[in-house]
Length: 364
Ligand SMILES: Cc1ncc(COP(=O)(O)O)c(C=O)c1O
Image 1 (cartoon, rainbow, N blue to C red):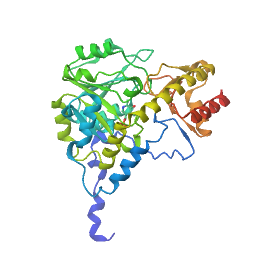
Image 2: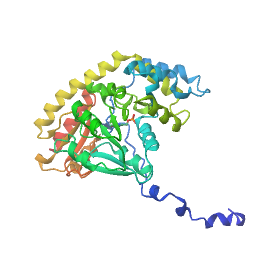
Image 3: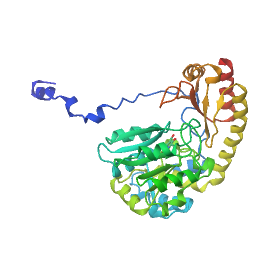
Image 4: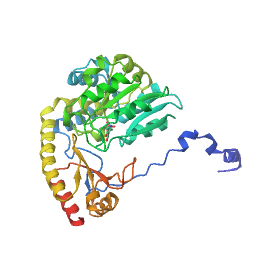
């Protein structure tokens, strides 16, 4: 630096940041370690099939070219997979990307977003990014939706409600009739996030032709095991789809991700085998966890929400002790209105589940 640049030093950078952005917290790089048993992010423990790896390798020599606008062939493949029309599908850089796009097209500063909590944290985070106001409505004791409470919190400023079904972190599935009741009673945008659809096969995607305010979100991160490649999609009416694409980046999903997703969608047998293995492990884990005295909430997903209260130990204490044994799970104690007794753990490979149980038993 020399004297010629002195004027730049007088800039008050803090005064330039948007006030609502200043309220967001810094992200921390958390190294999870190569040898850790990683059950904290709800991922599939199995690697993608060789067909997916092959598709990625074959695409590698074409990455000097941009991908097709609107996801090209992947949009058609997802239409075929879901039974929706291509113009009803929007592809994003993970469903996280679509959550933000939805808020950008419907919210102006100060508008409200209903969030039955506890739920997936990105809904609240993305709402704050666009200067909206997250309105939290507590779920019932069994984590099902409190329909009356939801209806009562609707105001003229309510623009969107996010319902993860099954819900993350609580793993429970809301019956279809309750979702229809919400669609009948609310005239805001209703987002039903079916990120874990393949584990439960319950969907309201067929209702997008009936309710113009319905957006169904799906992901290839979980059952398809492609979390690292970042592909999610929305199923909605063509008008909303068009608006989502208007504001999306020109190429939100890269060429390699498109090829990997297409290959994964074709290789259904591999996906089904993985899901079957997860379901088998799930049954074994329920028995073992209950024998340890933990509360295992009903799960329609590839993870469990677990209560530690009957054992008189906080989840924070338990999660810390698991971490010291290199087993990572997600602590929800004291978060989102919860008591300090809850954690979430993904279902791993049989070997990982065994190590998880051993680490738990040694603490309890
Ligand atoms: C309910 C829910 N929606 C969306 C996501 C994010 O999915 P993606 O990896 O497609 O961004 C998650 C990830 O945990 C989730 O639990």
